[in-house]
Image 1 (cartoon, rainbow, N blue to C red):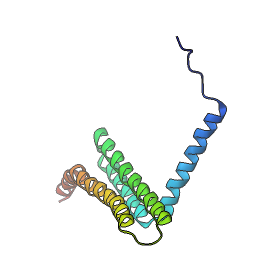
Image 2 (image 1 turned 90 degrees about the vertical axis):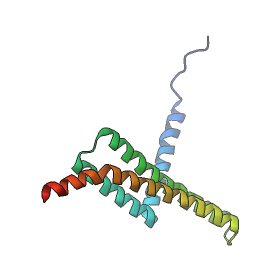
Image 3 (image 1 turned 180 degrees about the vertical axis):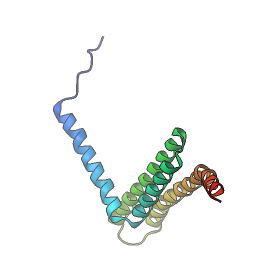
Amino acid sequence: MPPVSQAPPAQARRSFWHSLGVALRGARRVLATEPNAQIEAAIALLAVGLALWLKISPVEWALLVTLIALVLGLEMVNTAIEAAVDLACPEQHPLAKKAKDSAAGAVVLAAIASVAVGVVIFLPRLWLVVKNFL
C-alpha cells in the first residue's frame, strides 16, 4: 500500500500563492487597460446591483455569477491571444486576423448569451415593479 500523501513542501505552497498573485495582477491589468473589459465589468456591477435589489434566487445567482465570470474570463483570454499574436506576427496576416477575430467572437457570443439570460431573469421582475408602481 502506498504511503499517505503528505502536505506539499513549503516551496509548492509559495508557488501556489505566487501563481495566484500573478494571475490576479494579470486580471487587474486587463481591467485597468482594456476598455471593453471595463464596460463589461461595469455592466456586471449593474447586474449584481439589480440582482440584489430584485432578490433573485440562488440558482439565478449561480447563472449570473457564472456568466459574469465567463464574459470577463473570455475577455482576458481574448486580450492574451491578441497580445501573443501581435508579438508573434507584428505585420498583418490572414491567420493572425483569424485568431484575433475568433477570440473576439467568443467574447461576443458569451455576452449575447448573458444578455439573453439577463432578460429571462430580470425582465419579469422589472415588469412587476413597473406594474405595481403604476
